[in-house]
Structure formats: C-alpha cells, structure tokens
Length: 307
Image 1 (tube, rainbow, N blue to C red):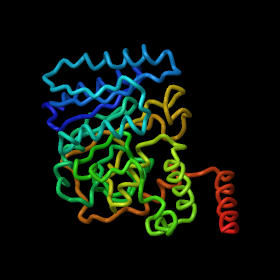
Image 2 (image 1 turned 180 degrees about the horizontal axis):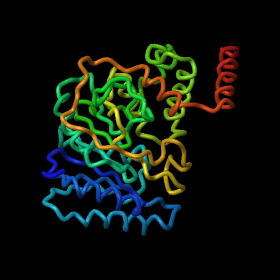
Image 3 (image 1 turned 30 degrees about the vertical axis):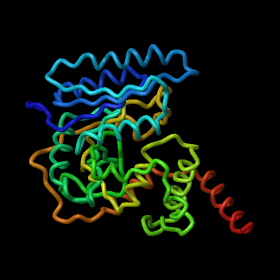
Image 4 (image 1 turned 60 degrees about the vertical axis):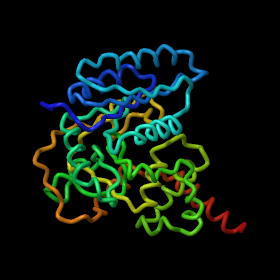
C-alpha cells in the first residue's frame, strides 16, 4: 500500500518471535496509523516462555513509521480464550472497527485494503459480522465477484466492528438451549455437520478446548450473522508446528499460498449465504474422524436410553 492505513490494526502475539517477525514486517509495509498489540504472558510451567515472550515483544519496538502504538500486555498467562477475548474487549472499547492478525497469520498486502473497504461498505449492515481474509475453496469459485457470504467466521486474518463484537459471549450461555432443542438443524443441513459442531461446541462449553474462535463463531450463529469470504486466499497460516497452540500438525490448510486481490472490488448483487461453498468447507476443513463420529453416535444412543 502506498499510503498509510487508517483502519486500526490489532496484532495478537505470545511466544513465537520467528513468525511474529514475519507478520510484523507485513504490518510494517501497510503502515497502520494505529497499531494495537495484545500479548499473553509466559506459562508458569514453561521456563523458556519468559525469554520467548520478551523476544517477541521486542519486535514491536521495530515500528519505524508514524504510528500510535497501544499495548495490552499481560504479566501472567491467561490462555487463548481469556487473552484474546479480553484483548478484543479492550480494542473495541476504544475503536469502532479493526483489522486483526495473529502472530502466525501472514497476509498479502492487498488484505488490508480489502478489509478496510468492506468495513466501510458494511459498517451499518448488521447482517455482516466478519470480514475474513481466508479462502478454503482451493480454486473453486461460484461467481466472478471478489467475495461471497458464508456462515463460517474464518479468523486467520479478519476484521470486524464494535457493533458485532458487542454480542460476543465468552460463556456461551445459549448453548444448552440450542443443544437441547436441536437448533443446529436450522443452521446446518447434514447430520455429519450437526454431529461435528455439537461435539465442538460442547467441548468448548466444557472448557475441554481453550478457544475464543469457536465461541465467536457460536456468537455469530446466534445473531444470524454472515462472514465475507474473499474468492481468493489473502492470508496464509505459517504457524503449523509444535510451537503452536492448536495447529501443531501440518495439513492441507497450512501455508496455503496467498494471491493479490484486484480492485475495484466486484461486489455481489445479492446478500445470500453461499451454502454450496460452505458445504465444501465443512467437508474439507471441519470434519471428524470416522472413529470419533461413531463414538459420538454411540454416546447419543446411550444417553437416549438412560433418559
């Protein structure tokens, strides 16, 4: 980008100076006028975290453009759920909208303009809750538009508004009602998808999965919100390794190449969720192993018998 980026950029970091340095360089090229940095503290049982966290935070001192830097650093380890949730609460206490990157999400330079333009385009349209930089269609596209609308809140590089984040419910208070009354059937169209998300949401609700992102997805579903998905991939996750919190095993969605978005953007003429693309995403990204699926079915059967 030739001019300074006016939309605030949020950078979420922890203990990975290697990937943080790469992503920081991409942010540096965009020259955001405001940079908000959220950092978690070292884990008590990981002695190397102290040094790694310090090395990671020192990268932020490399800001060499005119920039308002705001820092929200935790002295203790809060974990993924609490640190990101509280950090984004802090962001949207002060700003109406923001672009958000984690320390392993490497964007194409056009990602920033894509997000900024669409944050303006849909600023007052409460149907849209997320602008994503991710595309998991692997070359398939249904239209020639620059983007489509999805139910999935892909968050490896994304943007949103205060008006959307205000609905975020870290406790997932509505989950028992949704679960017990079968409301997922009204969102999803296939039994395997319902089984998958019942398993994920219950695991998150029980704190078996330390995640803010699944809680955010659930929030958006409860609001009937949609996500803008680019028709090309704009952000690559470069953090698949043993140092990662969730993405330890390299798979088919690791290091997906990015492409440059063309401008001016070609906007869809209608605001309809692309269920064909979502079904492909469900099959390719969100799936259970056959063994786990069978275990879930058995557990459901046993629960129905004991009731």
